[in-house]
Image (spheres, rainbow, N blue to C red):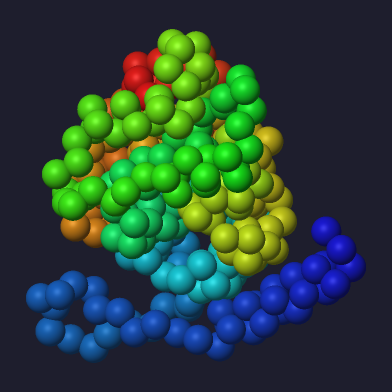
Length: 271
């Protein structure tokens, strides 16, 4: 982290500290309770909302723009010394906010380009080609394709055939990538460079993902790329992933996901 980044982070923490001391939220004891509301400090409201979000009780926290998420995370970070459980909550919150952002971008890609090109984009992210075809060669291959008349009627069997046409026919032509880091994702439409730089402002609260949650990230991406999408919004899609038993460990303990789990996930889902 550069000196300018450190200065920015100190200024941001000061602003958040001042904000959390001076802003209060009115909140009723119950929706049916007809009485005066109580006032709670902003940091108290945020800590309770963050805990609810990481336990899949609500997705509202993740629907704030990335800029707002960074500010709220910095406010929460101030409370770590007085709330012992908060560090793990913050880590889970940041990791799940990243996953939610990826789902948002994935849905935007589906809406803009359709299922076929989105499938090919995910294949490029998750599969390594032994021939090491460059992005330009893939782009030339895509340029020769004609957009189907109806993307909604394009089957996953057809997508698999098309993927092998571009990446190779041999069974060993496509192997799961050994690593899918956040930096690699920044080279795809799933996360922009500006968004990544903003998340990096969180320091250790974000950097731990590349060091400890890389396997969990890979499991999520492999599942996202193949699990049939029948949901109208990123929020519904995210809640469905959280509810899946096979992904519960990834959401609950991302740092404990093993390479074997990644290999099993990639092997079960054929390209």
